[in-house]
Image 1 (cartoon, rainbow, N blue to C red):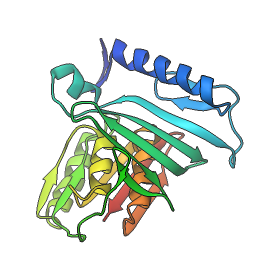
Image 2: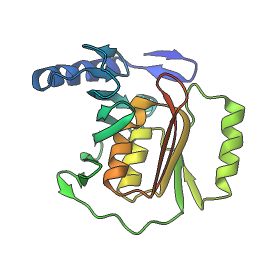
Image 3: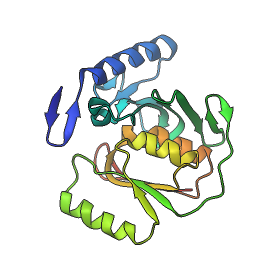
Length: 209
């Protein structure tokens, strides 16, 4: 285990990414962008399809034995995710779907409950300015009944898509953390999906059911 500021890297991150990259190489010739290893294969043109992988989202949770983490894989064209899959090993739940594809849980289509504005998930990105983040969280609490911080952006978005949470927002989160979840939200028919690039791989995200 190594730690840089508020971020953490585990051997499990690298091992998971290596295993998934090997599988993708056997079944696809598309380039892969992974959190641990960057680009593998040719770096695509803006309109080329490619994979975006977060091999262990919620590493700190995993390290501390908190059962909130997952594996996230998205098929993307530029900064648009056209298909996403997020696997939650603790609950053996595989969320999959995308725009025009609906949302599936363990290969069965699910219907989301009617949208409400009660539970908002957010996060505290390791690269974020502490004071700015705290100020923003204070503003959010006035507009939502409850706020939840799971420590796993991918899982948060999967739960929003499935109707367990009602919204998710985070500034400065990394693209591989949210790409698959954004595809799931589109498949589920979320009413608001905003994703604004703020750096090479950093984005500001807002999703509401």
